[in-house]
Image (cartoon, rainbow, N blue to C red):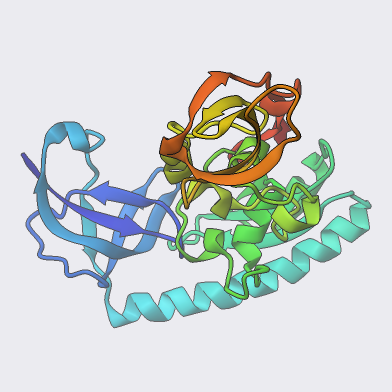
Amino acid sequence: MIEIIGVRFKPAGKIYYFNPDGTKVDRGAGVIVETVRGVEYGICEIANRMVEEDAAFMPLRKIIRLATDKDLDALEDNKKREKESFDICLEKIAKHGLEMKLIDVELTFDTTKIIFYFTADGRVDFRELVKELAGVFRMRIELRQIGVRDESKFLNGIGMCGRTLCCATFLPEFQPVSIKMAKDQNLSLNPSKISGICGRLMCCLKYEEETYEELSRGMPGVGDIIKAPEGTGEVLSISVLSQTLRAAIRKNQSDPPQINNYAADQVDVIKKAEPPRDYEQGGRQNGRGRSQQ
């Protein structure tokens, strides 16, 4: 067993484990830690607890100290410098005529490195821009290209549900989302109905997918041939949540079909319908928000 604390550096960002080095750190307390990027300020999200060594990435870095009022003042100064740096970088981008959109600027707590996040349609040759920025800021410069989903996470906004974006509120990382999830949940496949403000499939399609998959296991599919109490017929539609279906049933082959509703456990599947060719070919979004087959 080893003692750890969990530290978050950005709202809705990942939680990283650190060794408290004998210091009691309450949840919500500010801490100064050393990361691969340098010295950083973070918020404790998980107070001191013991975990198995296998549950933590070893070796753990030790925290430097609890944050002081002086550290908070330095953090505010850094935020002001970030705003100024944003404007300066915009001017330099325009000067070099680069096809890139600046999204955010992040300055490490120890002011040894500054990171510029941007989006672009393709690759951008920003070598001259980096040289010029290094001459202005006199510190390490990093330009990092991000995807459209990451852009929404940085900027935040209001989704069609009327709430602030999940990615900017509580989702630490993006999960793969596919068009199959919308089909399984019987949602409209109109892109404007199932896409977020980033233009990609909404992250919330993932939330209920496991429940729909579990409930669908014992359900006939649309187009299946079933045997019902009144005869045999074809499934016209299903309601996964209520575990019911609607089917066109004939007692005899020559009889006109009768449209009836049934509970899923009232019928037996005689023949499964063949799925459409494109059913399993829905694009899936990876962590950077691009579509892949």
